[in-house]
Amino acid sequence: FFIDASEEGDLLKLSGTEYVIGAESQIQTGERHAPEKEDPTNIQALTHCFAVDHLEDEDHTIKVPDMYQFWKEYIPSLHPPWPGKLLSLAYSNPRTLHPKSLSFIPPGKTEKAPHTDPLNLWLYRRIIDRDNFKAGTFRSDISLINWPQNDFLLGNITDVHADIRKQNLYQAKQLSLSLLYWLQTEAPRPDGSQGWKGLRLRKDICGTEDGLAKFPYIRESRRIMAEYTILEQDISLEDRMEITGKSAEEARAKKNHDAVGIGYYHLDLHPSTGRDNYIDMASVPFQVPLGAMIPVRMENLIPGCKNIGTTHISNGCYRLHPVEWTIGEAAGSLCAFSLLRKAMPRQVGNSSKLLSDFQGLLVDQGIELAWPDS
Image (tube, rainbow, N blue to C red; front, side, top):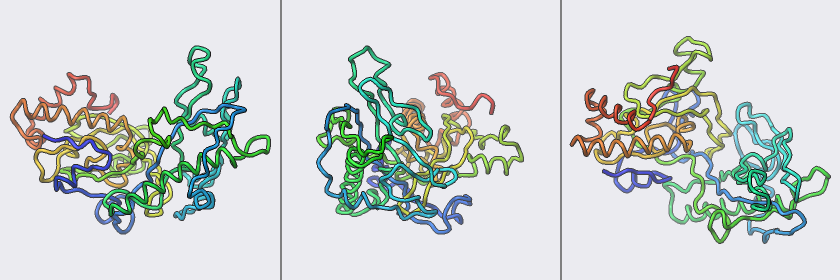
C-alpha cells in the first residue's frame, strides 16, 4: 500500500489516480458557495512563511527585494474588492468582507508587545514569548509571519508548466521578503514614524539561506475522486440548520457510519487565484468518513492529508493540520489493518464486519470517532 501525504497530492498524479483540483461548480456539488462554473485553476493562495524577532536599537534591514516596488504598489484584484494595497495594516474581514484595520507593535528591550484593538499582528502567530522562559534565554519574542499580507494570489504551482511553477515560487518568496522590508522601513508606528529596523529575519528557525520556509504553506492540493465526497452541506452551520430544522445550538454535521476520526474548524477559504475574496463561514464539529479516503478506482493508494475527497469549499476546514493528522493516523491504521486481515481498503469500507473491527481498532488506539454530543 502507498499513502500520499505530500503537500500537493503528488502521488495522485504520478500514479494515475483520478483526482480533482480547483473549484467545482454549483451544478456539480450543489454547494451554495461554489462558483457557477468549475475552474481547476482557482486555488487558495499559498504563503511563504518566515520568522522574525525584534532587537530594538539594532539595524537588521534586509537588502531591497528585487520585486519590492511591484509588491509595494500591488492591490489584489478580488471580488468583493480588497480594501487597498496588500502591503498595509488592513485587510478584508474574512466573514463580512468589510475593511478591517490591524496594528503591528513588536516588543522592545524590556517592554512586552501590547495587546491592542485592532489586533497586534506581532501576537497573531507569536511562537516564542520570552517571558515564558528563564531570563536571558531569548533576547526577544519570535513571531511567525503567515498573514494575509503574504498570501500569494498571482498563480498556482500545481499542475502548471515547470517554468510557471518556478516563476510563481520566486514571486511568492519576493512577496514575503517585500513584506519584511516594508515592515522594517515603511510600516507605520504609533509615534508617527515608520519602520521597525530591529526586525531580524531568523534564518536559523527555518534552516534556510534566504530565511524563508523550506516550502510554502499549501492550503489546497489535488484531491482524490473518492467513493464519498464531503460537501459544504454536510458541515456548514447554515446548511445543517436548514436541512435539520434545528437551531444553531442544536445543529450537527451529517453523521458518517464509517467515521475514522473527528475534526473541527470553520470553513476558511483564503483569497484565491480565481480572484475570490475570503469565503468564510461557521461550520459544526464533523467526522472524517472512510469513504472520503477510498479512491473511486485505485485499490492500493490512500490519501493521508488534505488530499481526501473534499471539494474546493469543504476543504476549507479539512485542510487544517489537526484534521490532516487525524487523516494520517487513519490512513496508516487502515493499511496495517488491511494487511493484517488480507483485505483491500475498499473492502474494509464496504463490509460491516471489517468496518466495525477497524473502527474498534481505532478506538483502542485512542482515536475518537464521534463528538460527545453528536
